[in-house]
Image (tube, rainbow, N blue to C red; front, side, top):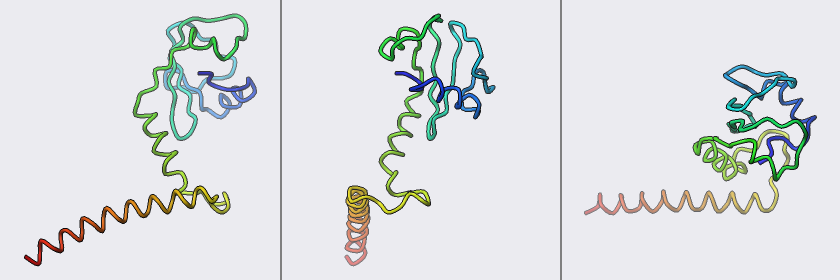
Length: 130
C-alpha cells in the first residue's frame, strides 16, 4: 500500500503534522532508517508503518510492501469500516443533499434498526400482559 499518491500530498501532510515518528511530528526532509515506526493520520484513522529498508530512488506502488510493513492495528480498520457504513448518517454541513443511494441506505438502516427495536419492545409488551 502506498501511503500517499504524490510527493506533494506527502509533503503537505508532514507540514500539517499528520506524519509522526515517536509521537513527534516530522518535517518532509526527515531521514528514516530501518526499524523506524511512522504513524500517518488520515482521518478518521491512523495508519502505522515500520520501515524495512531504505531506498535511494523512487519506486512504483507495487514495490512498496518490500520496504514498508503495515502494522496498523485491526481496531483502526474497524473504525474505518464503521465510518464508511455510517458516513451517510452523519453528513457534515455543506456536503449537500444525500444521493439517491445514500437515501436508500439510510432508509434501510433506519428500518432495520427500528424493526429490531420494535420487535423486542413488542415481545416485552406481550410478557407484561400474561
